[in-house]
Amino acid sequence: MGDIQNSEMNAPLPDTSTLEAMVHEILSQAQAKGADEVEAGVSLDAGLSVTVRLGETETLEYNRDRTLGLTVYFDQRKGSASTADFTPEGIATTVAAACDIARYTSRDEYAGLADPDRLARVIPDLDLYYPWDIDAGRALELATECEDAARAVDERIDNSEGGTVSSYVGLRVKGNSNGFLGSYKSSYHSLSCAVVGRQGNEMQRDYWSDAARDARDLPSPASIGRKAGERTAQRLGTQRLSTRQAPILIAAETAGSLFRNFIQAISGSALYRKSTFLLDHLGKPVFPDFMRIHEEPLLKKGLGSAPYDSEGVATAPRDIITDGVLQGYVLNSYAARKLGMETTGNAGGVRNLTIDPGEQDLPALLKTMGSGLLVSEFIGFGVNIVTGDYSRGVAGFWVENGEIQYPVDEITVAGNLRDMFMGIAEVGNDVDMRGNIRTGSVLIDNMTIAGA
Image (cartoon, rainbow, N blue to C red; front, side, top):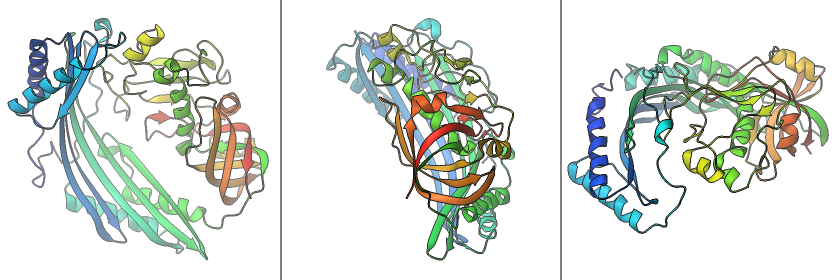
């Protein structure tokens, strides 16, 4: 797409200075109306997404979105408004709307901008912007190649949800009345495929995908397709399990959900509402003493990287778990004030959450587990963060003597997150790098497996 100057797209992304001037104008207008504090952000996004299903074009979408938003505070009374109208009249109307809203809201002593000393004053270049010079025709060719490879894996694969190619670029500019002004461009490109297999009356579906800031870092479409086809074929011939206690090994591509539950339990809103099983656990063991979990928001080309959070607070690497002990929470400025603490630069969430790997790959972990359940997919959302109770449907494979025996589904794993975290026996070195949570496979020593 170059700089989104493909002939099929609309006008290119504007120069950063144009949007910076717009943010300055918004701040000035809001302050002229009496706002004590103001923050404003402008974003532009453009992208292309195509899907081929059974060799035919299923979808072809171009998108170009823009948003202008601001938040104002009048004596800690908050008002927010947004628009897609970037004209002077649209800006003026939006500023007036936010100010009017603030005058009718209740005062909140914890409301306000991030503290000035926490704001990013130097914006590092994190190497996040790699436009992909691709048009719809080429994207359709790649999607077709991906799907064809998946369908060719096994004759039992007789249907498809499609091969998809997506490409996106965006520009973000943010500023506030405490002197912060930041901007950066980013890109995100992905390939994915999902196919359906049939064996007798049984049907199974699986998929594979990959993503990168730079399209040159993506695997070949054929390799994505083959992986999707292989995963689908492996799931055919499922058997049922009886209810039992056994260890489980959560595959790397699935294990991130376990750590999302952890982050949810140590996030500010759950803490100040006292609605988490990890309340008052700062400085206490939460995981086994071999585990380290840390945030790496400044990784070059990282899919979760950002130079500042959604409040403009500078991001920085930090440990959340060291030697199994909880070192810090996940807080924005509002939650931090309610808790009598300081923001951790996590407005908008964690970035490149990294679980340090152990020494064993997946086959070695299967040997270590011996007999148990390899979980390849979680189904549903049966997690209670208040109590830690955990019950989710899963699909995967039954393992005996370290070897996969047969696929299983229509089963549930149950336990409590407190016990699950402490029951982690090992984290594999097969780290999945495709998202914002970077972890290997996770072996948990014992869980209830509810089957037929």
